Length: 81
Image (spheres, helix red, strand yellow):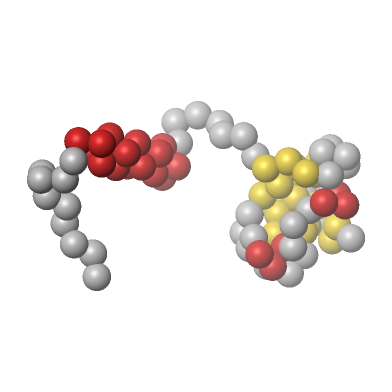
């Protein structure tokens, strides 16, 4: 259950909560391109841990997305093994 935070909290908490709010807002409504996760093919994390995520496979110089099972090359649609 979420509870509202009142004005009685210490000022230091206001600052950190504001920074969280600003960071979440920037993720929800990006106004510019954002860096993408980069990795070499051999060190890609498990695709199952990152469904519907995008990565730059730097040694292949391609983007790939996770379908929840495999990393899929965006240039050919082939599975990255």
